[in-house]
Length: 141
Image (cartoon, rainbow, N blue to C red; front, side, top):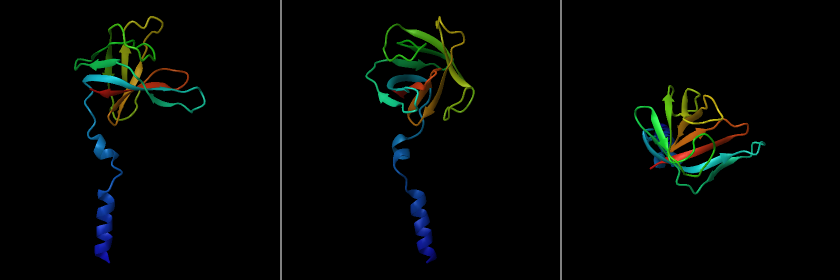
């Protein structure tokens, strides 16, 4: 009887739903990330991330500088002029934290505009300051 209990426990511990194996280790922040999904909520909590067809990217450099081929001061999926900013990492990237943020340059209408970010599996999630929920997911190239 003990042997069956041990076998059962070993099987339970070793089995998973497959998501963890498929995802692998979290990617490093430095490098190029492409926009793949965008989130918007109409105000009733029913929002969800939806796939976007975009060639917008963000590139993170080791020195705390980033560049993008699109606007970072708002929730836009279009690419366009090159923009720049800085980023700060003061907490674990594996959870949402107000201590990890992007400071885009040239946000004329906003002083000290911050975009919070964290890693969620293989995605970089940007959380914009919105009245209703909004955000973007990027995947490392």
